[in-house]
Length: 281
Image 1 (cartoon, rainbow, N blue to C red):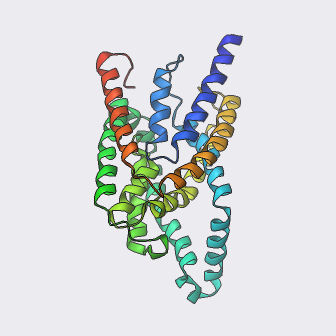
Image 2: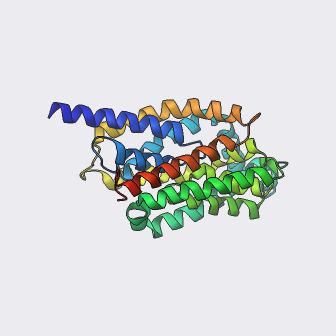
Image 3: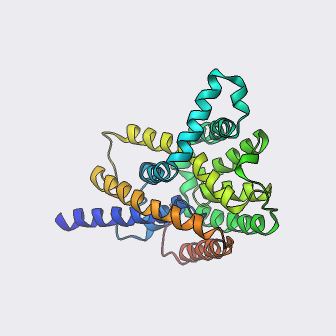
């Protein structure tokens, strides 16, 4: 019994570390948690609820890192509510665009909740999305003009990036990867695309995590409340460091290493599935 409890805590700690490492990189944290669940000794999927709750930790890291930007945007947005002309200011417009961009994932997340927690967690789907959207990211990074800043973001592009973020409801797509790919395709710089993907994710991820936390309260949890809390705390600490390193990396490097990694990871999962080493569900 003690050994089983220790194993559950160790697995949760590892999954929290994995969540923190992958949430902000364009490699899909939900895919990594899903794959890791199949490979760990317990052999069980930690579940969509565990993924959503641990994402609260990584989003807390975003709130801390971008606290000045968030405060500035929130203040400008609130000011625009009483002074219509202030809505034309870049920060106020960015606040409205983040809300607009959150609508697609909110609507689809509620409409497809059962599929997201069921059929879409099939590892064949996950592996295919890792490979397919890895190719999309590589193409976007290669052909994108990379000349637009966040300040030039308009309503049409704001909605487009919101739809791209909603694709991440499917494990393997990647929230940051989908948003960054779309931003690169319409001409934004790598750093602008990454920064906006982080800011855009705040309302959706926090709402999803808090909803899953409330919905799972008092219900049987395959991971356990204590281990889930530990994983969330680890995800916060590791995620903060990843934000710092990732934004610094994009100033001098392309997304090619992440493209190669996605292709390799997706291919490896397909090989494991074909050999029967892991189960698709």
